[in-house]
Length: 428
Image 1: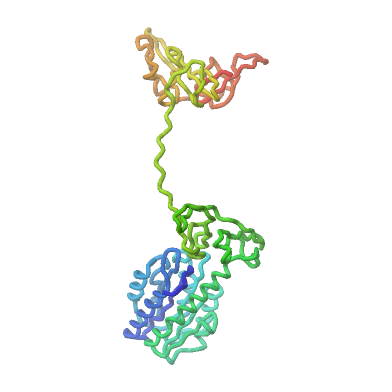
Image 2: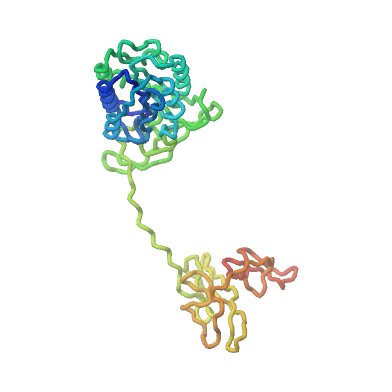
């Protein structure tokens, strides 16, 4: 495996025409598999895809960039490359590369160098179309390398396909493919390095770049910085802090690294590797137990009490009162009214009772029971209706939205008003 560990999307465009033959195509399969082993294949590393072409309809994407993400799986898939035979429709294969293979639907990644490696053994069926499609593919941002096999190959067409003349490779027979693996892989690696460098921002320069976030160039990226380009101006931005462990197993914090493949700051990034990074993975915190509500009753005294609602002591609680403690001050509050029937089967209203277990006013509260011989609860599940009143009647906030209201019977200069909260009433 080479030292080229940058991210890249590499597409094989493989001639599978009849002039190659079964025996030679087996050598093509071995070349592809051996070539792929020169790179570190992984989720945030190098990805491969493959197109085979001969005559329609045998011009197809064999697998996408996100299909095989380990070296073993990838090489095994390349060794299974189908061989349909037919003519040499190179132009259609280049078109498929541009319109389908190098797209997100096929697993291609934004901000990652796109490299096409074309392998063919002869002149294409429609050379003019091949020249036009090759130009369109290169204009789309892909870098194209061309490998020609056999003496009948057209050098002019290979130069037309490739991005640069130095990206053209030629061998006389298929056995010679093994001899160029090292040179081709080094060329691809150099292209990836150059493309990666061209996507980064340094010295606060965003000339010619679209608005968006870009990685800083090395070594600035290792310090945890990236850039936002807006109207040609570069704005340096720091990543958030992450936790790491040093060589002495001591915990420390440092800026994370911007990863252009995910457009996020991460603890590590293959785009901008740090020396011996060891991110700290915090253990899952224990699930906090729900905070219990106070059940101790009070009577006008909130000294040394936490801010919260408290039940009134017996028998005051039966009258529908409870207390809110705020900064050790006690505020007496009233529950809303509920409907009951007396022993003569006549309906009447009385205040609900504060239930410390639920933190709300209820009809029936075990900690403060009513006299069951005198009252009977008839509507424990009565639906609350929202009132449109702008004042409080009978000191009851039942049906009122949370807020402050004057009493309905107050005069113009009455300073008294009520706070309604969760259908509870507090006189202020």
